[in-house]
Image 1: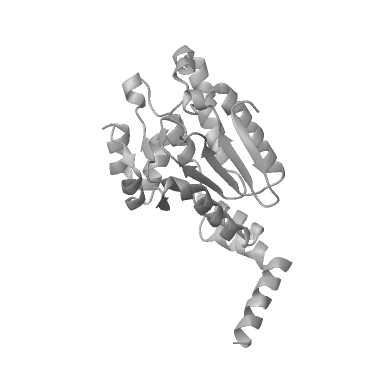
Image 2 (image 1 turned 120 degrees about the vertical axis):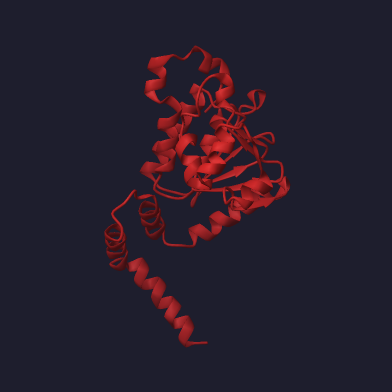
Length: 244
């Protein structure tokens, strides 16, 4: 890997965007390497922590590459196909955002299930200033996350969301000092890994399902009700309750 570093642990994978000379801008090489990460996590599902090096999450897509892309490349959805794949990973994904998350970097963070921000985090989508749109998910994913009005402020008005406003809007789960960012993100993952992996996976599928409720909820619950993990967890809970 030349643009990311991977720390694979027993219960999670930590991926750090690592192009410090380009403020971790998302280029074609990084897209390819993140596809490899997704393939690993599809084959062996684990929660993912995604972060950036050097006090920056990702300050955008690589403009030099974008400048050379034309209609055919746009139709391939080079960045958006990766971000959609990331969003569909079977286990939860957490973005630990320090510093800038702009353009494609913001869209990468938006594709994760949960975001935690440092006090210096800034989200923005300045693509119209470059004559293009935020075509890797922000035009619809950001509206789902914070509402259409705020999404238009960001996408049309060029307004950037600092960490505190992002927190008030629900875009990020927490704001912490930069020195505590990774510890807080790992604490969240620790809590996740204590839960049933199957229950997390099916919960994510149900939450992300575009429709079909309550039937899809019932089907997911039916699968979980038959698992030994569910029986063991509930037995432990009931034992603890009766011994109080």
